[in-house]
Image (cartoon, rainbow, N blue to C red; front, side, top):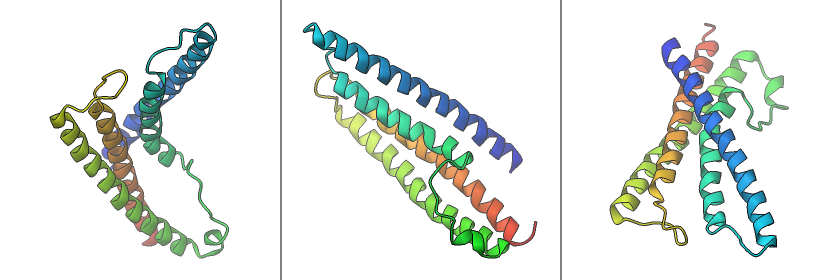
Length: 161
Protein backbone atom coordinates (compact mmCIF):
# COMPACT_ATOMS: atom_id res chain seq x y z
CA UNK A 1 0.00 0.00 0.00
CA UNK A 2 2.84 2.37 0.84
CA UNK A 3 4.42 1.92 -2.59
CA UNK A 4 1.09 2.62 -4.33
CA UNK A 5 0.54 5.72 -2.18
CA UNK A 6 4.05 6.95 -2.99
CA UNK A 7 3.42 6.40 -6.72
CA UNK A 8 0.07 8.22 -6.50
CA UNK A 9 1.66 11.16 -4.68
CA UNK A 10 4.49 11.48 -7.21
CA UNK A 11 2.15 11.07 -10.18
CA UNK A 12 -0.29 13.63 -8.83
CA UNK A 13 2.55 16.12 -8.30
CA UNK A 14 3.69 15.57 -11.88
CA UNK A 15 0.23 16.03 -13.35
CA UNK A 16 -0.32 19.07 -11.14
CA UNK A 17 2.88 20.60 -12.55
CA UNK A 18 1.55 20.04 -16.07
CA UNK A 19 -1.73 21.71 -15.00
CA UNK A 20 0.20 24.70 -13.64
CA UNK A 21 2.10 24.98 -16.93
CA UNK A 22 -1.20 24.83 -18.81
CA UNK A 23 -2.51 27.76 -16.73
CA UNK A 24 0.58 29.78 -17.61
CA UNK A 25 0.15 28.97 -21.30
CA UNK A 26 -3.54 29.94 -21.10
CA UNK A 27 -2.62 33.27 -19.51
CA UNK A 28 0.12 34.08 -22.06
CA UNK A 29 -2.04 33.01 -25.00
CA UNK A 30 -5.00 35.07 -23.80
CA UNK A 31 -2.87 38.17 -23.24
CA UNK A 32 -1.18 37.77 -26.63
CA UNK A 33 -4.54 37.32 -28.33
CA UNK A 34 -5.95 40.47 -26.70
CA UNK A 35 -2.91 42.54 -27.67
CA UNK A 36 -2.79 41.18 -31.22
CA UNK A 37 -6.56 41.62 -31.58
CA UNK A 38 -6.04 45.31 -30.79
CA UNK A 39 -3.74 45.49 -33.84
CA UNK A 40 -6.20 43.52 -35.98
CA UNK A 41 -4.34 40.18 -35.94
CA UNK A 42 -6.00 37.82 -33.45
CA UNK A 43 -4.54 34.36 -32.87
CA UNK A 44 -6.55 31.78 -34.78
CA UNK A 45 -8.08 29.07 -32.58
CA UNK A 46 -7.41 30.73 -29.23
CA UNK A 47 -10.86 29.81 -27.94
CA UNK A 48 -10.32 26.12 -28.81
CA UNK A 49 -6.83 26.00 -27.30
CA UNK A 50 -8.04 27.64 -24.08
CA UNK A 51 -10.84 25.09 -23.87
CA UNK A 52 -8.49 22.16 -24.38
CA UNK A 53 -6.01 23.53 -21.86
CA UNK A 54 -8.87 24.06 -19.40
CA UNK A 55 -9.61 20.35 -19.54
CA UNK A 56 -5.94 19.67 -18.78
CA UNK A 57 -5.94 22.09 -15.83
CA UNK A 58 -9.03 20.63 -14.21
CA UNK A 59 -8.40 16.93 -14.77
CA UNK A 60 -4.67 16.99 -14.02
CA UNK A 61 -5.08 18.90 -10.76
CA UNK A 62 -7.83 16.70 -9.27
CA UNK A 63 -5.66 14.05 -7.60
CA UNK A 64 -3.15 16.50 -6.12
CA UNK A 65 -5.95 18.66 -4.73
CA UNK A 66 -7.50 15.58 -3.14
CA UNK A 67 -4.19 14.51 -1.58
CA UNK A 68 -3.72 18.01 -0.17
CA UNK A 69 -7.36 18.06 1.04
CA UNK A 70 -7.91 21.20 -1.00
CA UNK A 71 -11.49 20.44 -2.04
CA UNK A 72 -14.27 22.32 -0.32
CA UNK A 73 -15.91 20.24 2.37
CA UNK A 74 -18.49 21.01 5.01
CA UNK A 75 -17.23 19.73 8.33
CA UNK A 76 -19.21 21.85 10.77
CA UNK A 77 -21.53 18.95 11.65
CA UNK A 78 -19.14 16.03 11.15
CA UNK A 79 -16.40 17.45 13.40
CA UNK A 80 -18.82 17.25 16.36
CA UNK A 81 -19.24 13.48 15.92
CA UNK A 82 -17.06 10.81 17.57
CA UNK A 83 -13.72 10.29 15.81
CA UNK A 84 -14.48 6.75 14.63
CA UNK A 85 -17.77 7.91 13.08
CA UNK A 86 -15.92 10.77 11.37
CA UNK A 87 -13.52 8.27 9.81
CA UNK A 88 -16.43 6.04 8.77
CA UNK A 89 -18.22 8.94 7.05
CA UNK A 90 -14.95 9.94 5.36
CA UNK A 91 -14.49 6.36 4.14
CA UNK A 92 -18.02 6.19 2.75
CA UNK A 93 -17.54 9.54 1.02
CA UNK A 94 -14.25 8.37 -0.48
CA UNK A 95 -15.94 5.13 -1.63
CA UNK A 96 -18.78 6.94 -3.38
CA UNK A 97 -16.37 9.43 -4.95
CA UNK A 98 -14.07 6.61 -6.10
CA UNK A 99 -16.96 4.89 -7.87
CA UNK A 100 -17.94 8.16 -9.56
CA UNK A 101 -14.43 9.03 -10.73
CA UNK A 102 -13.70 5.44 -11.72
CA UNK A 103 -16.74 5.54 -13.98
CA UNK A 104 -15.69 8.94 -15.34
CA UNK A 105 -12.20 7.63 -16.13
CA UNK A 106 -13.55 4.53 -17.84
CA UNK A 107 -16.18 6.35 -19.90
CA UNK A 108 -13.76 9.14 -20.85
CA UNK A 109 -11.33 6.53 -22.18
CA UNK A 110 -14.10 4.73 -24.07
CA UNK A 111 -15.32 8.01 -25.56
CA UNK A 112 -11.76 9.08 -26.47
CA UNK A 113 -11.23 5.83 -28.38
CA UNK A 114 -14.55 6.32 -30.21
CA UNK A 115 -13.57 9.87 -31.16
CA UNK A 116 -10.15 8.68 -32.31
CA UNK A 117 -11.73 5.94 -34.42
CA UNK A 118 -14.13 8.44 -36.03
CA UNK A 119 -11.31 10.91 -36.71
CA UNK A 120 -13.15 13.85 -35.15
CA UNK A 121 -11.12 17.06 -34.88
CA UNK A 122 -11.71 20.59 -33.61
CA UNK A 123 -13.50 23.01 -35.91
CA UNK A 124 -10.97 25.81 -36.31
CA UNK A 125 -7.54 24.22 -35.90
CA UNK A 126 -8.51 20.72 -37.06
CA UNK A 127 -6.70 19.39 -33.98
CA UNK A 128 -7.53 15.88 -32.72
CA UNK A 129 -9.81 15.92 -29.67
CA UNK A 130 -9.14 12.45 -28.31
CA UNK A 131 -5.81 13.20 -26.53
CA UNK A 132 -7.59 15.67 -24.27
CA UNK A 133 -10.32 13.14 -23.52
CA UNK A 134 -7.61 10.61 -22.66
CA UNK A 135 -6.09 13.27 -20.38
CA UNK A 136 -9.41 13.54 -18.58
CA UNK A 137 -9.44 9.75 -18.22
CA UNK A 138 -5.90 9.77 -16.80
CA UNK A 139 -6.70 12.55 -14.31
CA UNK A 140 -9.91 10.87 -13.15
CA UNK A 141 -8.15 7.49 -12.99
CA UNK A 142 -5.41 8.87 -10.75
CA UNK A 143 -8.03 10.49 -8.53
CA UNK A 144 -9.77 7.10 -8.37
CA UNK A 145 -6.55 5.53 -7.02
CA UNK A 146 -6.11 8.34 -4.47
CA UNK A 147 -9.71 7.97 -3.29
CA UNK A 148 -9.40 4.19 -2.94
CA UNK A 149 -6.28 4.68 -0.82
CA UNK A 150 -8.10 7.29 1.29
CA UNK A 151 -11.02 4.90 1.70
CA UNK A 152 -8.76 2.14 3.03
CA UNK A 153 -7.00 4.57 5.37
CA UNK A 154 -10.31 5.85 6.74
CA UNK A 155 -11.73 2.37 7.31
CA UNK A 156 -8.49 1.28 9.02
CA UNK A 157 -8.89 4.23 11.38
CA UNK A 158 -12.46 3.16 12.12
CA UNK A 159 -11.04 -0.14 13.36
CA UNK A 160 -8.51 1.74 15.49
CA UNK A 161 -5.41 0.94 13.41
